[in-house]
Amino acid sequence: MCIAIPGRIKAIESNEAQIDYGGVSKTASIRLNPDAKIGDCVLVHAGFVIEVLNEEAALEFEKAFSELEFD
Image 1 (cartoon, rainbow, N blue to C red):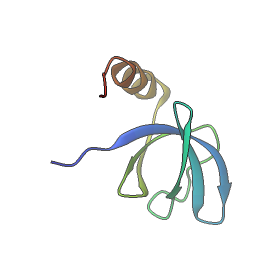
Image 2 (image 1 turned 90 degrees about the vertical axis):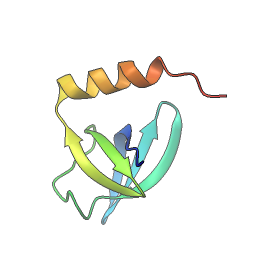
Image 3 (image 1 turned 120 degrees about the vertical axis):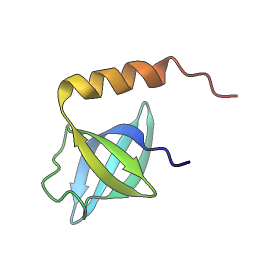
């Protein structure tokens, strides 16, 4: 099973974006979604932005992930 993680783009340099995952920042490629921009909520899988979410979907994902408990 694969899972994509939602995050927000904080910065872009070339084809790499800094993604904020609720306070944790990681780099992901935007080569699959070159029109992604700073502030977009995106789904990231295996180091690639695989989808840019609309604001309604972004809020739903953020709410769902905030309710998860990780050990």
